[in-house]
Length: 147
Image 1 (cartoon, rainbow, N blue to C red):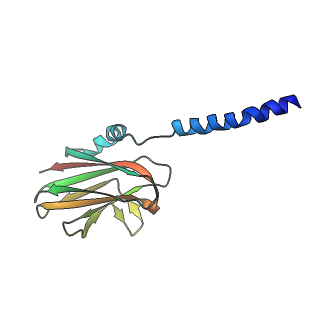
Image 2 (cartoon, one colour; image 1 turned 90 degrees about the horizontal axis):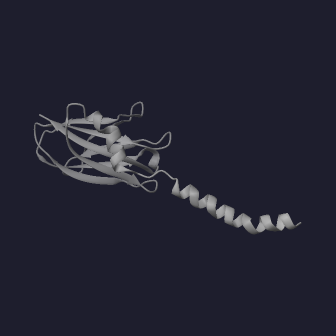
Image 3 (cartoon, helix red, strand yellow; image 1 turned 90 degrees about the vertical axis):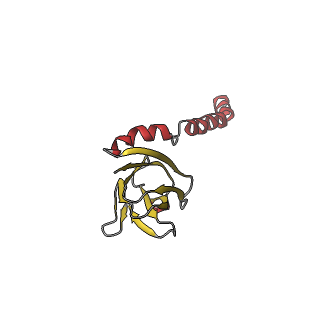
């Protein structure tokens, strides 16, 4: 009887410790680490900038803009570090936010890890990034160019 009483007294403390340790050991979205893992995918493109993409809840979309120059070839490397089945989709939009390219192909539902684009007109372009199936996630986009 006395051992049961002791257990009931310390049981809540055990639960609190377990819960706290599960939060402190949770993976974090580390942009530096993600960049190290995917930078080589630029191949012969020159690094311009990286964009961190972190979605705390399903349905979140990140958007960033960049000025692209006519006649230059660009590559966006898409890298996400998620549980199985989560992948990042990016859409490249023109200045009017009209879709001009994507790493997602509807036929066959294929998601590619890079997006190459030869710029036809100098101007501001937008990249919209989100995770397949409106899931939360963590990732990075790396922008590079070559002439």
